[in-house]
Length: 282
Image 1 (cartoon, rainbow, N blue to C red):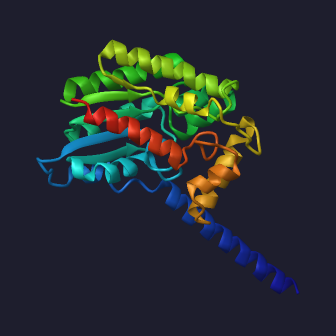
Image 2: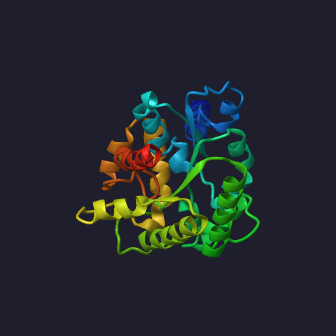
Image 3: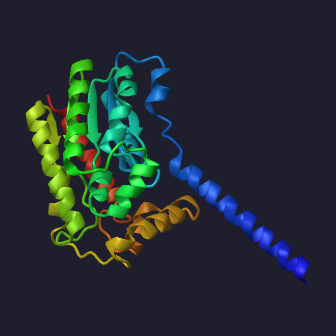
């Protein structure tokens, strides 16, 4: 009897390890159209190169992929898209990767970064986790975010010919009275100030989402303080169970988000539409 119980336990452990491994791989696999791959390809001189810098919202494995939406929509308009998004990154992390963006010789650059900076500023436990996992040299705060995003803009303006656009942040959650939602508004104001000061374009994603959500009801099954558990559940549902981002969003009571931090396909399409407008401006 004990032998069978141990065998069953061992089988269960193996199954859980396999599920974790598959889920982790699917959630963290780098984009196929990432800078390191694009750099090795022969550039088509008839195509305008667009590099999209960002975190998991841009990476598009645990959030509906707005870069892929853009690529599908604008395939016939003479653009090629490079996905420079990496899960969990803050503005400082994106700054460390700037050289690979420059090597892509982009015509356009969009930057959607800061959700993790804003999130880290809300809870000491989140900030400490970010410092360890993302190897940050200091505690994340808004002035450090401003410094890093400003430096990123300065380098890209100096070392590329690209037209640059900064996007304001999607909200954290959809309750505009919640501290997390308001914090993304505060960080978006910093982004807007930097865009004006650096003479680069500004794409009001936060403002558009806030307007869209004004008459929507948000009813998530758990509060923001438990957002990590909701995020991991959403990742499991998508990567292992194959549940769509939109269905996860509906289950969690959101209109644009899947959890408190990531976008469903409505939110991703809204992001893609705003970037498309920027790219088609004369």
